[in-house]
Image 1 (cartoon, rainbow, N blue to C red):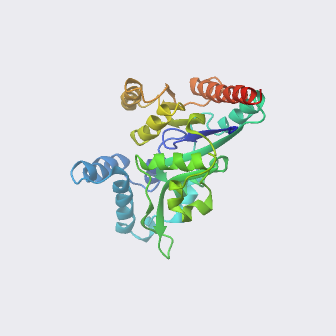
Image 2 (cartoon, one colour):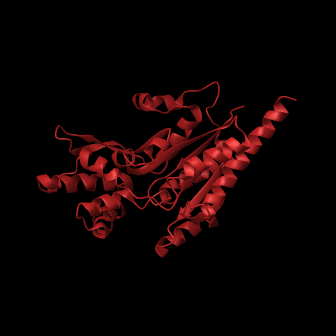
Image 3 (spheres, rainbow, N blue to C red):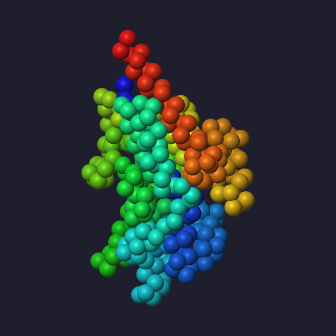
Amino acid sequence: MVNRIAVIFDFDETLAPDSTSSFLASMGVDVEDFWSNKVTPMYSKKGWDPIPAYLYKIIELSKSGGEKNRITKKKLAGFGKKISFFNGAHTIFKKLRAVVADVNPKVEVDFFLISSGIREILINTKIAKQFKDIWACDFEYNKKGEIDFPKSIVSFTDKTRFLFQISKGIFGPDSRFCPFDVNKKVDELYVPFNQMIVIGDGYTDIPLFSLIAKQNGMAIAVYDPIDKRKWGKAWEFVNDNRVQGVVQADYGKKSDLNHLLVMAVENKAKELKLAESAYHR
């Protein structure tokens, strides 16, 4: 029996406003035009996958501008340090650890981040240290530190691969050099799927939601209460039975999301305590 719970977050519009859009805006880019007129036609008319499409257009943007407008590793990292989060997001980790410790001190709770955003931004945020690992889209950089080519792409079903890696305990810096290890059989799981909780907001999270729901884990969808255009997307997740809950992206002490996450980890910890008691009878 594994005394461990894994809580897996998406990032953009789950823990914080869209970091890629925010970064582009900081560079003076017309964000609406970028997504609607540059990226969307790539997949709606040319058949690209949406994620490499946006990475390609960002590289194109960087290379088409002057020297000052080049997108570099340093600029991405610097922007990551300035990211602002949704209410309470930076304190939810400590809260959930305390809840689990109170219910069952033998149970560990680990946090992971799986995102289609830009890794260099995400690994430099103030909450990056809370995660055992962070998987996101990454670039190869040239000698000047400028983005040159997509090194790693995290799209729709790509995200489920990392759930399997978490389940098998394949994470950390060394795992980047052994991409085929995810297919290995293991004698004991690091954490079973039914002891995972996934929080996300978008279409790229649907494969995660579906896998976790089928394996008796818990899937939670969040939405931005300010952007009514995205409410329909959140409702689709409920209608299709993809998730067990849909709440606004607010992690404050009195928020529905805070309560739902507390109840989720609390109940998982109680289930493990009961299972352990039954095992030792």
